[in-house]
Image 1 (cartoon, protein in one colour):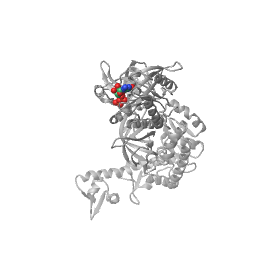
Image 2 (spheres, protein in one colour):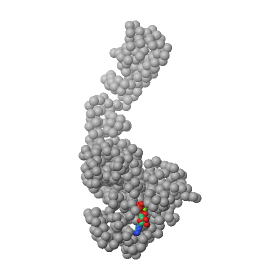
Image 3 (tube, protein in one colour):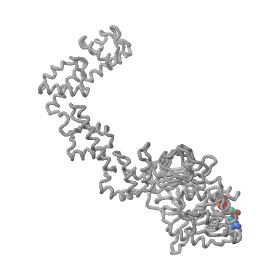
Length: 632
Ligand SMILES: Nc1nc2c(ncn2[C@@H]2O[C@H](COP(=O)(O)OP(=O)(O)OP(=O)(O)O)[C@@H](O)[C@H]2O)c(=O)[nH]1
Ligand SMILES: [Mg+2]
């Protein structure tokens, strides 16, 4: 059965709650204080079935909002999920301040369907009613409630006159309205939290997308807590599932009421990410009292959530009343916001509604060049253009499917389908789980060649660059780096030798006996410690000729495996490290050392001690003062 949500809107005392009761038989004012004061304070709910002219039965959930100017924030928590509005205007009072404010909010939320209801028709004569009708028609001109597109009906909740016409109009509109997507990823902005005897924690809300089943695990945003759905009620009836567009009550396990609040959102676990920065299209109402300045702070409302936000304008220094701009909102606390979400902003003081807009990107990149063009695509582009833009902006980092889901809120399936053509055309390549913009891969490949060529010219004796070192150098994720190297390999633009990458024909390659000799030299010096052998002696014992041996020594010196401390003396790096360690330990006993003590400490003759001390002086481990060394 199709479900739609109908919201009320309008000035205080204009008969919204009375109308909902006259239609459904349910009194939506549920608080004692509401009954006592005779006004609505918080959201109220009711439901009914309507039969459309085509025979289709539609389940209608009502969200009744308060008209009092002090409770606009409660009204805002209710209207986010509605499909159709009943704009309630009392015939004996006509248009009042909250008629305007509520209506402006509905337009900012981009609501498309509604009926204007002139209530309390029993209190005025037909001439007055006609005058009010004209006045209201004038007020609604050029909007989604303009007549004759949207009906305007006079009713009396007291006498019941006009109610049948209203039900008929509502049923017709409900049957025509686009159902919400129950195949989308589920999202329930919470509007009430309470405990029910025998059940425990219950939350309610309008399920704005997707489907929820009993036993589903859900994540609470922004806190990250995991909860399990124990049971579901839709419009007060137990249900096997809650579908998008339904007033939904979830009985939750593993959570207490103090962990939940209005403004939090339930969604499948590990699917979305909360954000403290969102890029938006922002509109300032023509009725806003003054321009909105860059960095202004405002109240921010989206679905049931409410916070403050700082507005950073992407281009203009300020936003004039009636104008629109690209902006980045900074929220003091992270929240779950997704592209397509509508929001309202209100001035700090006095608190009045001044504007609103559309969330475009909840994963913005700091100081991204061309951000306005990017946002324009998000605002106006087709789904596949949006995906291409989101992939392209990640350059060689690429973007995973999971991240694309989190960024767009579209399902994997929808994204796969949208990208088929783009992947086939080669504009986007898929590397393992990453989507990559082709030009970014091409650019990475030529960058790799440049980096390698640069490396070879600066290191003529090296074989090439280690793979991981090169990957970090070009700053690419492993998958993307692997793909680029594989392609270049196929194109014969580079070579891979074990763990080393080089340009063809460049770099030094050690032959087997050279590699063996290299190891011998290294081992000889490592084993000797500070009692180093003469270099020529070690080289003489090798099976290769002198020039090749010399080349290997140069390599070892370059890689700092061997360290030359004087013309004659070469040490293995580990031996010098040991000397440093001993000096550091000696320092605990004395801050100075002379040659005699040094000889004794390290266990070397004067022939080695002097060059070693001079080396330590150069390394600023020691400082020579006369005949002694200070240990630094
Ligand atoms: N005569 C007459 N009185 C009505 C009608 N509808 C509502 N009222 C009366 O108007 C008063 C306000 O009605 P509500 O339905 O509470 O008004 P509301 O718009 O819900 O008010 P808030 O929720 O506080 O904004 C009540 O005393 C109702 O009995 C009507 O059609 N005819
Ligand atoms: Mg009311």
